[in-house]
Image 1 (cartoon, rainbow, N blue to C red):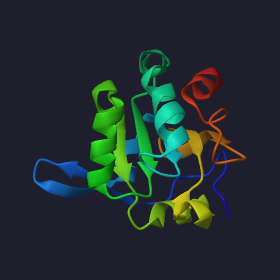
Image 2: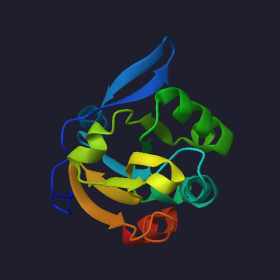
Image 3: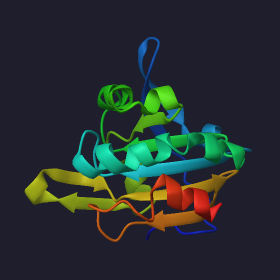
Length: 162
């Protein structure tokens, strides 16, 4: 069953590249006592994810911070090496977006956001969504009906919702 507004995020460890290589990041630590936007994409370096979704948050970072958002996190079912390279190539890292990999899709499955598109080679991926989380509780959740669209889950839509 998919996570919904009012639900508490499940415990999860995601991956990022740190000073010494891959390291686990406890999602609970990132959201505890904080106002965080988490957005997820079907795949790093894919079309809409690279040309629309990430840029929508990059261009809205200042406005989101003005609304009290402490951090913006991008999650994809990719390894942390890919997420690091993608963050650098899109400007997301420079904009302050935290890029985290859900390499085995454990978090994605735990929130009921699995997505598959075998013809495109996308297996065990994440649906496209964005959520506002306050102290670990989902306050706003926007899931796209189609993975090829970035409207409800984009930076502008989240900004308007908070």
